[in-house]
Image (cartoon, rainbow, N blue to C red; front, side):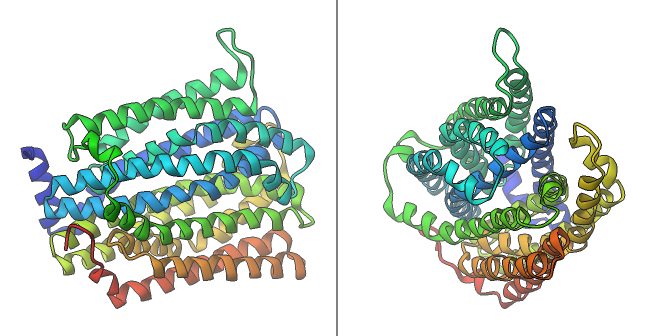
Length: 465
């Protein structure tokens, strides 16, 4: 029996006339949640930075390799969010439980693949990037700990997607606040050594993060099983395969996973290109720091994209097609404005922000990092449009063509332009930054064109239509 609070919230999300207000209602907890996540990453990087610039490069490089494998979880989470949102829009609690339960089962299966692959290929991947021997040692230590904890990372991410697909963005925020506090405390203890534990250095950053995910998974899935929240997951749905539902989750999600893989593989290649420029010694830490700072602009855009996916799926589940399209436009405008504003702040205060990460002043890293923030910041509104219109279409289960946009604009165009400008024409890191900015512009215009066509509104979901 649905609670009065659930009914009231569902009605609000499906009928409130002010779509900007509705979008912010869903997005603000996610914005705080993701900013907390980035802040913890910043704190981690600052702690690791006490070891030296090599340690910063090791963690930044490791995280990009990790994300190439971790984007596989996007395939499950995107399909799950789309299906849960549709079922909630239809007011079908049993269907939502089945979708959530299949996501749990698929996460375990995916972990069984990621863990051994990650452990066996980490050194090879690092050497492909051309890292120095000093960076290699630190990076392997970090990655070995991380990959052992992969199942908990996936299950945490999946629980968050289930809550958000149901329109509940506050519960995962509260869980993440708890998780991030544990993360910071754990990292401090493991990196520097406390309570009789040795100082693990760079590996300690991965240990604290892993511990926080273990605890968050127990809390999040306990909440989903309790029946006290918008989605009640039944035990039997977590371990009994429903092949049609699982297949659709995968069918919807695989293009989104490939889209994420394209983004992260491109970033991986950017590291490899930068490693071969004349200013590589300073460009790589500048890229790591600049990318970390740029997350403060990117994460609100991703949060608004989460709202866009939820509103799209719920409105289509309730057969409100015009409202689904209107919500996509409203969220895109909102996200572009937020990302532009934060990007401007990062450029104005780039020097102090970059220096915060460094154990000693380094004018070359600051100079190159400032150029990165300026050139990339110009294109952030278009980046927001690409993200949010893609998420709107993904929330409907329309994922193949958004993947094509990312693949061609990032993997083909971005890599080609970066090599051409950075290496062939000798523009070094500045050429790479221009390539990133130009392809943000291209992908934004292309995503808007695809959204306007409206084909995404006709996707059929198992058990809904």
